[in-house]
Image (cartoon, rainbow, N blue to C red):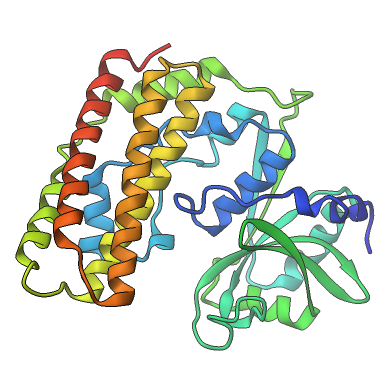
Length: 322
């Protein structure tokens, strides 16, 4: 095993997976790792309140899966605001970056790889079946194998992959061919948040935020039209994806407002929205499995969520500053 990675391996059970209802797998792993390292990632959710019009476009017009949603937050320019720098490199093959990866691992720096799930035996639902981009965290080597972290349930767990498997997963055209790592900002010691910089970006975002909440009207209309039958499964899956993202978005924006010390009513309202969205997501998922659609119940909950969101947005516009 290279370098001091053994110290990381001894702590892996503490690396909890965060925010997969909102972030994709790569950003979810970044956040989980940086939270474990003591960085205040909550401060970077300053624009996590996604517009319902955006969700309509992503899930119902473009027909994207939940994990394909490209949130605005956590861009490369955001990370220095919490005291860390993201370094991402593109490479055609794993062999191009292997020596650099080994050097970083020897310095106890975790390295994130974009890979193709088709070659990942630890993801049995897609292994050898589907080509999809994914992220793995390389943490060391042992007996010629690469040791990686990947999410399983609520934690990042350690798995071993052969060198050949890692090369094939990285070199596949279905991955993004990127290598990413994080290092402390050169000018900082312990992790610190640039509160002034965060608030400046938040205010710019808030000034441009508007949402007519028309997605809720559409879902209510679809449910009213389905009372004597059932909606197509594809549409139900899009509705489920939208409510999943809504739950994660409101939950993470609530964490931001609480961390930054906003009026306590705001994170409470956001938490209420997140809970209602989660309840709706569960109702839709049960309908997908059972074939029985509780249209009236979904209409009632969706009407409630629409009113909760309207009140929350009005309050945010009026009192959502520090």
